[in-house]
Image (cartoon, rainbow, N blue to C red; front, side, top):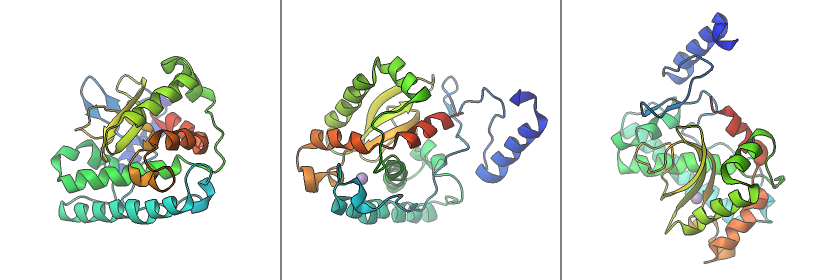
Length: 250
Ligand code: MN
């Protein structure tokens, strides 16, 4: 068994020191979020850096849901701005940018509003780009599908509840599918660029899937019709990536 394997335990312990600089419990039952203690423990993988990763597809490849101009402005202006500003904030506030951004989010209350807005904005968009694909399968499978069906009765019911979270978010923000401290899948939303990893968030947990409902994400094609954007967005969700992310939580 994993926890009786000294070399693996040593590897995990060493990795946690050298790669993450934080202490992780090296047991098979380790949880990144101990709800009883209210203590956040970060997953070893994946984690987010402070710079933008390349967009994994062309601007015009999601046309069936999101137009190329929106994608280009969203990635090169809005999201790029969050990345630049979070690096500025990190420099001003003494944050080591070789460490995971998730560490900042977990204690974001200790930093400025500039850090909160831009660390959240950068994290949320890095997750958002990877969550989309020109060849979305339309539906998850395997353990994620089973978990969604058990938590929300059916995949269609999940889609309705998640869509409602996005439609009903007043002003700008995000809809989330996340894993809470009891390892249950939940749906919620956050204002502005907040997310469930933040210590100040009303909903707390590990974000699996996030939907950007800021007007900058859809206004050119959909204008005021946010529900139409959300309906189309489902057709480009990268369920392979989301399933791997779901499986990556310790
Ligand atoms: Mn956005």
